[in-house]
Length: 224
Image 1 (cartoon, helix red, strand yellow):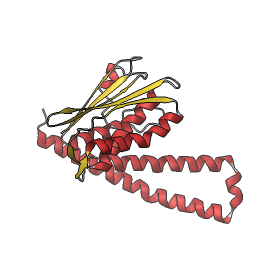
Image 2 (tube, rainbow, N blue to C red; image 1 turned 60 degrees about the horizontal axis):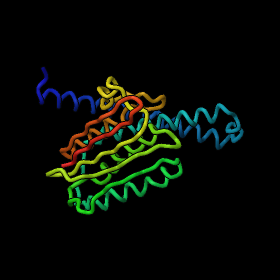
Image 3 (cartoon, rainbow, N blue to C red; image 1 turned 30 degrees about the vertical axis):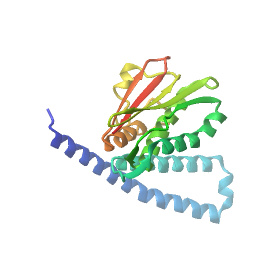
Image 4 (spheres, rainbow, N blue to C red; image 1 turned 180 degrees about the vertical axis):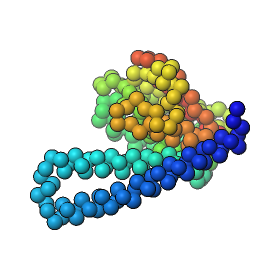
């Protein structure tokens, strides 16, 4: 059985390997991208070919994938600042509401005015919550989708519940969803929820999920 030191060593080795892998791919990718831009500048007619758009789309996908790797690798590094938690959470939800309104997805919120001032990495927490909200709106029916975001005090911190009426997650998938590279999406990287977990744990918090197929999902996030 692995002790904590062994687990930490394996994690560090994994993150180092992932960082090296991303770096080695990003350099030639930049050269390829620059070369294609030079070709398009010298021969604008190549952009009329459908294959050209396919090539550029695939390049954009690889760049996005590398950005996901970088996000995952750095999710546990946080910069804490004193945060008016209630105002901060309401601001995040306000930024999401126009998208949900456009998609005809109902958003219900319950954020008390009495939430404490907390030490948070505002960029990482925002990233974490937007990731969970995006998963929720991709899971719910449209129209008819519903997402609820509620917060309650839980000494010495807060508990955030994000609930949806979506397709749900099977028990087998629930056992894997926080593992890197596990995904049920055709174009997913499998890094979204692992990033969420890293951010939460970096804040000395915890995350759990309750779900059943066709009965929706709720994520419980504790931040201390």
